[in-house]
Length: 361
Image (cartoon, rainbow, N blue to C red; front, side, top):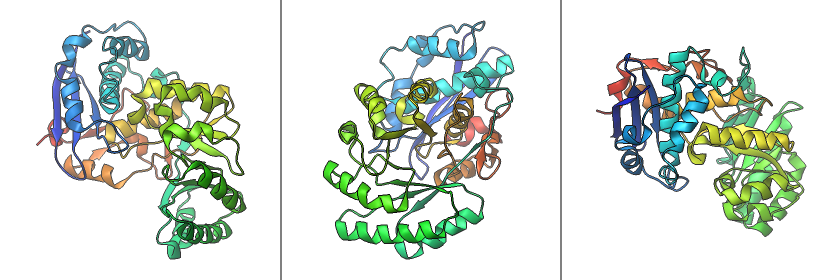
């Protein structure tokens, strides 16, 4: 099988530039992918993605239509060598579009193609809150509980000790309002030093969070060690040589997997499997991705042999902008509030009006 691009185009629409990739086969089927890099978390821009994917079909060549779809896509991407490594979100877009197309041809869902169970399970999603303003945090958390969420992630924003103590007081109020048991996660976005992290994790033990995500800079996390509260690895997983030390660390409780940072579904799934073998939990989440990447991440989550924790794949405001630009679309993986599911196949089944053109005007 050979594929041809319909679109590889960058849109400047808010909230940020993004790329849409559409490919087609000889029978007119089409598969979609998207990339919306988020500097400074992303190394690349949307223009970098477009440049890296220019003329990709020549390097891609023929795809083995008889091999299982995931194997065929992996073999096709291997022909790019390290060419797409500097643009992981572009690599995800191409992988997603290829899997979407091949799974349509084979009548499979992507979760099934990745090795998931039939029928695929549902996976809960976590709610997301900012710690500020602290005065309303407990009430906002209670609202999410009333809506049926069983896990909440709270982004910490304070940078000095006084601000941290205000956040801690608000978090104590949150814990008092939450039912028991209830999963509470925190994320300071790598803002703490190693010494600050150890001290603040001791202070946070009073509210018993499941873990604190990426408390220190990516290159430092493997040095954190066992602390009063478990921690999770996120951006550190982008550094290949840190994966094994993190897997071996007694302080690490979970891997938080963003396919758009890691360079695709296959790479994220391999990390998930390695984490599961070591007894670590996994969370699949997004980088405020577009509809195809969000749908693909949901398929990844439900494909895992060891069920992930509640995943960070709830609808987000940036996704609503994509949907508005398309004139409305359906993302079956995100159809039910509070959980994600597989499309059931064939492919992603992301559908809407004039999708091939809607985001490239």
